[in-house]
Length: 459
Image (tube, rainbow, N blue to C red; front, side):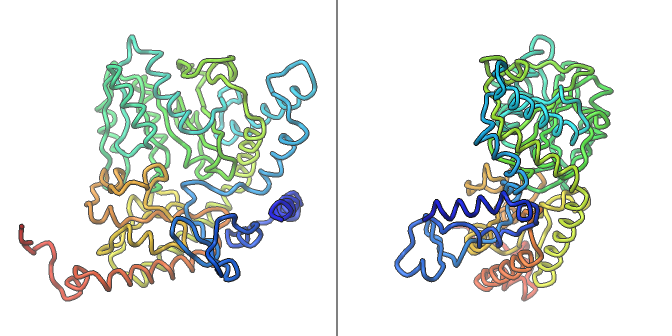
């Protein structure tokens, strides 16, 4: 029964009329086969879904686009033949199956390159942005270990960049972790001052995964070029969402992800500049695929999917940007119209609009997140949101611990609808009001008491 339902869904995805229409998460939920999760007696008839102790009616709204995006049906359409009939190994160069897979990989490489204004020979496929970041940070510094022993990055980078830097520290390299301004942007003067003769790499994320702040890439690239330092940027959250020109921005290394751009999970790419050439040491040895930068069989279906996602982004980036900006404005204005004490974390001006990180004063963050069980949102990075510690990104901005604990990241994407945004507003306002009714601090604020002036008794 479930297999038959899945087959019907697959046929609908392959139908061009269906595959090219825009859809909402609610529409997908309506077409999805029944959940295999065990349901309590009577819940199945009532349309209830139960998992990890959470019971809701139907599937929740999906507003967590920074964690991952749904695969665009047109991407799936491009991938399927390479699972079924064109399944050859792209490195098998003695027969048709290998030739057609290799041709598809090279076409995808060209599509990725075109989206960032690069040469296809500068694009190397990896398993994702985490691997690309590791290759960039460790690979470059280990190659130049004899002369370059210093790396500059920021306190708000993705965990995989920060952890790569910590591994280099254990090997004797020096790392400077630059603070950021309260709006999340790098201070360019501090960056320039931090560069030393032995600095080999500056790594600054293009669009922050937690707060959506867009760094001044062109200015950072100019500083690095003037100082003769390689500029690496983690562009996993930027690809297909903001214009990227590697030459104009002075980028030497860049990490990319497939599943943040409506492509499949398990595939990413690394841009490595050819002129002037950036040299890196491979971090994985094997058959020498991807010109020795990243050994291992290239997964043709995934690579084709990432290429298709980049092609679609080239055509629809402007449209998606305008639409997502309007939805972000609708969400922020809708929440602020009904709630006070709402703070936007990070710059609102220099920001990718699909990422809206809000803190709600006088509300306990974990309670708010659990109360919003009908909306799939996050309290921060998908890589760290399981922790009860406040976000290190928000603390780096100078957000106090209480407000950092109340942050919620709303992720808006290509398939988000106005109705979903309106429903998210309604549910968020309802839950915040409910929690504030139970908060003695909020009651004191309403009565005009300055909480900061209170001397709490010590026991």
